Length: 345
Image 1 (cartoon, one colour):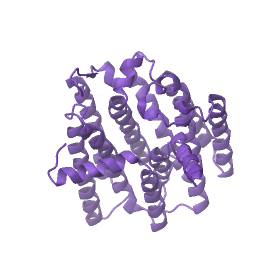
Image 2 (cartoon, one colour):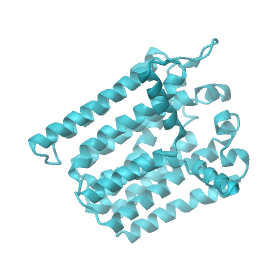
Image 3 (spheres, rainbow, N blue to C red):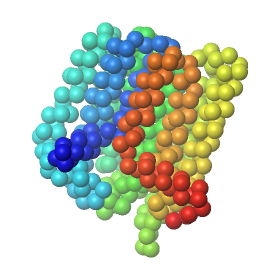
Image 4 (cartoon, one colour):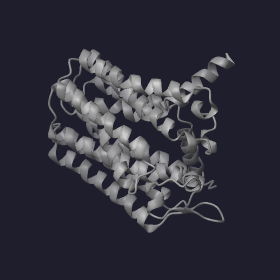
């Protein structure tokens, strides 16, 4: 039994199951922009393609970053770092995902445009993984990664309806900016100490973040401004969706949706404020994790009420279930509990 648990844990780490909550929702969100109801076979196919894309992205990243990850204590249990999976085996996993995704696309009756946008996503993701920590200007490669994930939104719309609507484009732009914020700010700060030690480049390092002799981090005004600029862009995109009302909500429903979206987004702003002032204490990691979850939830809050019950259940399950494997989320919830009791670390 213990051996089985170790294998399951290794698989969870290898494919980054906790991060699948974002990936699996992206093509479903694209589908939601063009259809209220999606047949079950299409839903299953969209999730299958998302999983293939997810494995390609994260396993390739781990292969490329293996020399860096070997010096990172947080990665000590990862299969590639431990040597329980060899790089050639990981490469085999990565290279099978592209034909698998294209085969699934063909099985779904996807048009050439759907296969084409999916290939663009794979290429952009490969470029990011190969160049992301070596580029002269990391925000540019962050943007490339954001576009790579956004292709899954466009893909979902193309598979279901064969067309991309204005709403689809706005949602894809939200995803692009969101990824830039997550990777360029939270991800860069998470890896800051080891990145500085290994001499690699990231957005946080480019903008002047560094460790302090007494512990913690120095977060420069440039990095904070960058984070809040991206958060502001996300607010604009959410407002565009609400004002355009492409989902054709009646006034009363639109008001309720707008109120819920505003609550979630303002809460995410509060968490971003904490993350940008915590200077590397445990507060920063916890608030960063919760910021990511609530910020993305504000987009879900707009789209979910427009869908039929089946799609709502699938979309929520795709988002929530993988998060349950994220130990950082439990730590973040414990942090909220401590703050609620007035027990500040």
